[in-house]
Length: 163
Image (cartoon, rainbow, N blue to C red; front, side, top):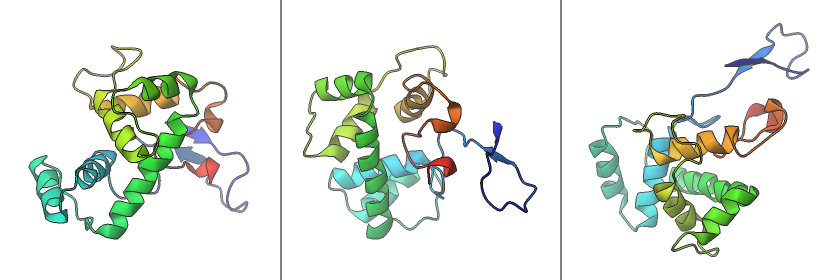
């Protein structure tokens, strides 16, 4: 999907559009959302780096991103930010806080559990085999925000118009 930019960037440039990324991608990241989620989930469960890499390989995902402490901390920050974004939407905040195992002291653990149990508020929009994380990112952008498309936030990552 392409949109016209509004006076952004180099004024001499003739480039006037930007694209929205497909749901499983995160702006300005080389790693897909599925790999980020599984990495954070495995690390949060206390798995070693080797166990995490093996798990991601078993998923059939090829990644050349080194799963080391620095990228994992970066992924955790993205999910911590998602926890705070979820809390800005009243319907999602209520669902998050009613979830079994919710713990405001452990935002990453709460987001992981919420994503694993998430079901769309509007079933039938996305295919039945879509992972819950893709459904949640879709619902967050399209169903839980209103107003101008240019002012909406992504659940994971920051689009260029908000940087």
